Length: 572
Image (cartoon, rainbow, N blue to C red):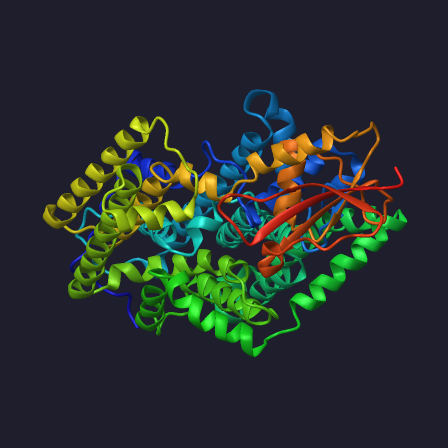
């Protein structure tokens, strides 16, 4: 089958300043003026913070103020903690870690663009006569790379996870590095294979054996699926495996040198086995319900690309993202429980596959995508503004009441800057819509401009207008001050430690960050005890604990089903 002929979409250049502006508006909001949020965000930050404040043992064995976390690899937190230590004087501990995560996200976006650019420039996917004699392989490659980046940023499920201080942004970057390495291997097998191997090692030290194994399967399967990779497959695989082994082995070998390290490694290996113990009925049901919106709008366009390119599946631009998507989705299905974190890695190759399919979309489908984006995101922005105005003014009363239930006691202060930014973002959206429906000729990347712009608009409004409300609802800042005050006011001594009972990771990390509470390690004998009650138990009178005095009880205003109790041992 010959390559398709593009008749309705052209490979015009998306201005660099426009693409960079969209990327900045996508990436930066959510990392500015924000506290650590429960649950995953604060917990991930807690691991990096413990490394920043701790010793070599804390760097080798991820933990949150002494509580081991065997379900996380150390690499993302090494990077965040190293940057955090270097920059905390300028930014503070939390902002420095956020800056490291932002840099990781930016790296991932850059690698996705260059991976697609390298694949789309190849002769096998070039249109036969797409836009006349003036076209070039470089123009087409840039257009496809721009499109892929827009599809990726428009994907719903990626948005929130990329703005949390967790391992997910790093894993996103490693998947992008792997795909970039495979694309580069077509011309430079040794360098490309080494990059792909480094990505596998980084994945092993981030999300464990399952994801690393999925990427290794892709490397083995590529020569079988694509003639281009078959020519360089052996050399690429040798360099990839060698680099992966060299980079991945030092951490487990270092853990084997001590008893605590061996116990941590055993726990990490046990978690890896459990993470591959699926599928289960509950997990499959969760993925069936979540995947359609999580991967929107990438998945329908990717399916169309697979159909439209059915006679040329061996082309690297199709084979590489398709195999990576299938392998990572299979790894997600092997999980014993449903969670967005298992679905997230497949967003990168899925968006790349969708980018290859966008030029083949019919005009009617393009218009349908555009009008869906215009309608849905315009209505969503109206809702955001309407509820914010109700919260600020108290009118309409019913809407205002519902919003004030989100963050009881919230008092808005100094909203002028947020209003100006929100108005500017809304005006930019209206100008984008006007440009999209009027400008000619149509470009390859044009069908995804409104979808990406709508996601950026919604996120920007939420992270400006609503950020103080979300901070109030999700932070432990004020509660941490109360705990610390009770601890200091009740004969706390130097060297005292606090034992924790049922304290979730986010709360532990927040208390350690905001109040620097001296949590004891598991098994330590402490004269202080901090207890967390959840659900109906948080609304009842606390049960007496023989030998312990209850000195303080508190909760966040926004959550009546969560309570914390501070005890001191009577014998001391």
